[in-house]
Each structure stands twice: as structure tokens, then as C-alpha cells.
Length: 70
Image 1 (spheres, rainbow, N blue to C red):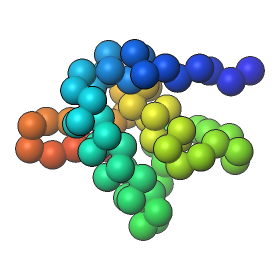
Image 2 (cartoon, one colour):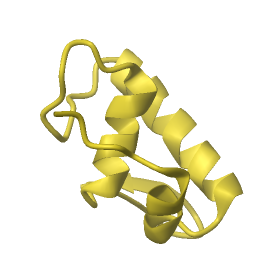
Image 3 (cartoon, rainbow, N blue to C red):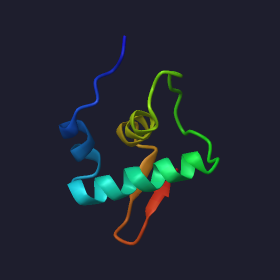
Image 4 (spheres, helix red, strand yellow):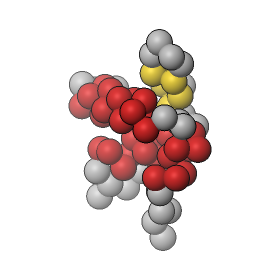
């Protein structure tokens, strides 16, 4: 069964919607460039959903200066 990832759940991890958007976009670009995924995902998941799973599971964090992958 798929876990529902809601906007509210994402905002609990990264409380600013603008930083959330920038962080997700940056991480998608990293994955497209060849960076490994930090969580297990389904082949059917989109890149954005994979990044959202990383955020929800706490594998992707941020500081005011940059986005960090754990």
C-alpha cells in the first residue's frame, strides 16, 4: 500500500514552502545527474515523489545557506 505524502507532512519537515520547492528541485536535479537515491522507492514513483519520500523520512534537510543530503 502506498504511503500518502501530504503537503502538511512535507511542511512539518521543511516549514517554508519556498525552501521546500527549492530543496525538492535541487534534489531532483542531483538525481537526474546520477546521485543515488537515499530511500527505497517503487519504479512507478516519479522523481518528485522519490524526493518527497526522502524529505518525509528525514534524509533531506536544509540550512539557510544550502540543502543537504544525508
